[in-house]
Amino acid sequence: MSFRIVLTPKAGRHLNSIYDYIAREASPGIAQRFTDTIVDHIGKLSDYPRRGSPRDDLRPCTRTITFRRRVTITYVVEDAAVVILGLYYGGQDFETLVREDQSG
Image 1 (tube, rainbow, N blue to C red):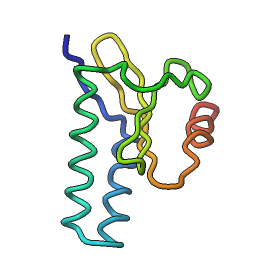
Image 2: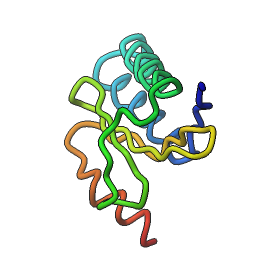
Image 3: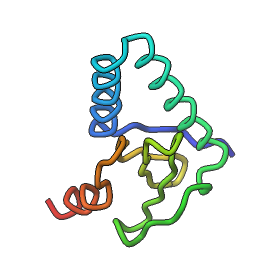
């Protein structure tokens, strides 16, 4: 069974922010290649949705995977979809940010 990948609006904003940061610090071409590769990495979850680490301590049913040790991706697996909740770049304290999103 192949799962559908769904990017929440927040995750989409996170991806755009990563692009903007890299485009500003390096170049738009590098930013595009990096974010395209993130999207490809996320796409692999359609076949292996439970390959990430369970992180119920952050939010019920949440899982995380990393990308190139620079991006932490948080998601939940639903009936037929993998819902991407957020993409946290670099040194962001993603654990605190995910918990704040849950409480606020």
